Amino acid sequence: MDASSKAEVMKRYVEAFKRKDWDAATAFWADDIVLHAQGRHPLAGDFFGKQAFLDHVGQVSAQLGGTIELVEVYDVMFSAEYAVAWVKERAVRGGRSLVFDRVNVYRISDGKIRELWTYDSDPYALDEFWS
Image (cartoon, rainbow, N blue to C red):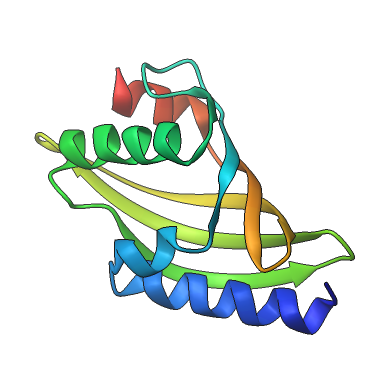
């Protein structure tokens, strides 16, 4: 898969995520996707397979009441096997809100996201937010 194909996958994936079209966004996930969510909070860890990823997203969404939003996409970069997105997100949980920068690293092949690593600009703030 060449860089322009990866760019198209990421463009369509980000567009779906921005408009909160979860069916369209999750259609880009491979059945055997692996999510690596950093941190020491209860929602951190490695999640194997599309159903585990969906369960994780469901837990996050339930905790946030659907308040998470993609505020800005600063940049998306591509290599032969990966795409990297530098983004700003916002979330509200209870009386607390958090705006944070995040780098997402995607391993993409055959038009599907196969693996995703999330790296937050302030992992301690995210741990506190979720604890």
